[in-house]
Length: 345
Image (cartoon, rainbow, N blue to C red; front, side, top):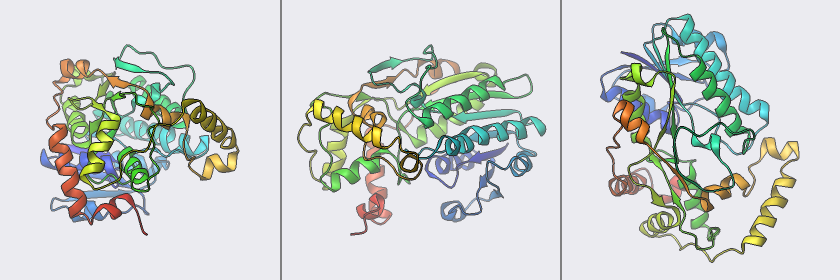
């Protein structure tokens, strides 16, 4: 099967590419001219690169020609940027891929979405797919991912099977910019305090290998998955702060700092968000903290994977303990903790 993967020059996409090659598929990737493709180029199996920005409809359509399956994992996931930045990288890119798929008769389209669509300043416990799209979104990322997901599901037809997967808290090897390295960087610098004030925050997370597996499992059952969305997570939920402490201890990092007064914390976040409403700051700089990022550390966010298990036999193969061992080993092999965290001092 010919598989076109977006985002393969990045973290999650590289794991999807790995899985495509393991399954014996003919792998194609779309990358920008400026993309760093060292990992792709290092693979022993051949990978065909198509050079195009995903906002370039003509270039995207050309890459879609002859494909059987498109797995779209690329997107803007930063915490800064204008609405137009997010719309171009998330919505326009997805629309171009869907148009390219329709034009060239691609049979299947798997979209990697996010539970962040439903982010709210409240606990979410074992949420399932009956949850409705919100009227208001936490940020531009959540809004544009929602628009993109709805476009993907609406495009489902007898000639193009589409589905959407919503992995929560993706982590694993080759992740230099996700929540894990960000938390550990703060821990390294002694700046990570107990923002949850002792609350045992329970969360779903998803190793990159598990979501990569799920992409191909969902594609293998189009009659069940067509037009559907699924939450995807590891088999084991985690206690966020316990996990941070465990990984930090194994890497020789300081412990999490003292509890933060919640009244002071909320006032500080409100002030920061008021300042970051200035267009220049919002577009060009990440805020030190936001209501959205704080919610990831203080609210329960667990998601049911029962629908994915029922419809396409999703069964996470990789345990938390094994994945943590692999992550620690990879950090050491890849050049050590400072390289992983981007520390140059």
